[in-house]
Length: 235
Image (cartoon, rainbow, N blue to C red):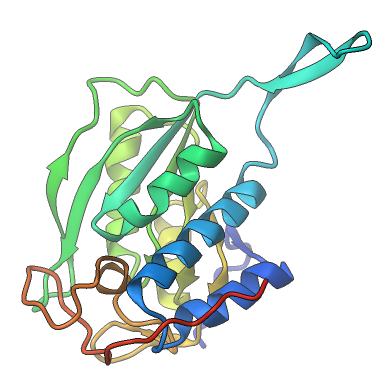
C-alpha cells in the first residue's frame, strides 16, 4: 500500500453494518437488484457520517403535549452524482437529504489514457449551495473526482465533500494532494490499483453491476465479471 499524505482528509467507516454490506457488495454472486439495494443502504449510512457537522438553527415545535425547542438543518446542500455510477447513489441521498438540490456531471474513463473525459455538465450559472457533496461509488485513480471538484470550485462551491463506497490509496492521495480541503468519506480503503487501474480487491465495475450491463459494449470499460445470483442481506 502506498504511503498516504500526513493528514489525508479521509474518513473510512468503522460501522459494523457498513462492513457487512460491503462484503455482500463485493460478492460476484450478488445480482444487480441486490447490488442496487446495497448501494442505496450504504449511501444512506455514509451520508449519516458525512453530515455530522451540518449547521443547525433552533426552532420551536409543538408536541401533542407542549411546545419545546428543536433544531433544523440550516445548511443548503447540493448533490452532484458523477454519471454513470453516481446515479445509483442519488435516490438514497435524496431520501436522507430531501431538501437537497441535485446537479449532474458526466465523466468516463478513456481506456487508452485512463484519464477522465467530461461529456455532460448541468450546473446552473452560480452555485446556490453552502455544501456540495460529490457522489461516486469508486475512487480509483482520483482523476474523475479531482476534475469534478475542480469544476465545482470554478462554479463557486466553497465547501465540498466526496462520498463513495470503495477507494484505492492512489486515488485518495491524488484527491488529498490536489484538494486537501475536501473531506473523503468511504466505506472501505482497498489495497491498490492493478495494471488496468481497477481497484483490488474491489468489486468490479460499479456501473455495470448497478445497471446490469456486464458484457455489453459501451463507452466505459465493462468488467468481465460472471453473471450473479442473489445474496440475501441479513443485517
